[in-house]
Length: 112
Length: 115
Image 1 (cartoon, each protein chain N blue to C red):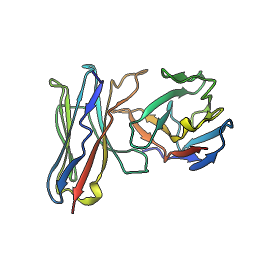
Image 2: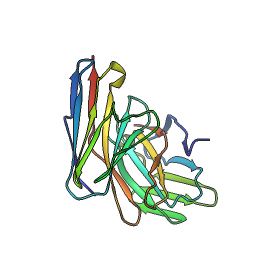
Image 3: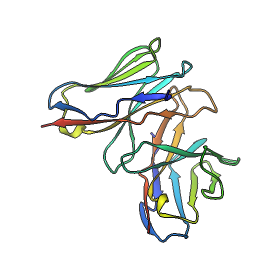
Image 4: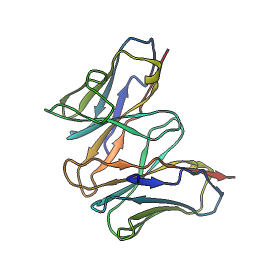
């Protein structure tokens, strides 16, 4: 079992719809959870961080965390073609000496 | 968030040669990381570079092939030695900023092509 699992996609949604990206992790001690956006040919960009169960909203983005189910998701409301990118899920134990573990990413296409 | 720069942004090299990639951060950070990412693939961690100690390499990566320096808290270099076409990839520097989340940020990357 991979430590951080994501559906590779591609996930295709029409413009204006809600895109839902999902991620599961295996390390129950994980404390911090991240979503990165990576455009083709560019480096990953951190867009959301969450460490408490529940929802965290930032503009059109909502991160959802359920530690009991070891599940984290990213919702993108009113999806735009500019949201088309690969989204990487990452987890960290948030203690010294442990590195962040990245998922392989989900490709998202938003159709105009 | 930390501002990270890398040099060079891209290079085309001949097999058998070496290339040193520089990573500069605008603030002091304890942990710096070097990743490799081939087109369409996920991130692969090469090593963790902490100031004042030897770099810690991941399985499949060795110091002779990827020597790393970390002379201070704002700078690191990664050398890709004795290159072959299989080393063609994007090399990314990353730093961890300690805080509530211990967030990790990435530099713009170095696109390396080995002929």
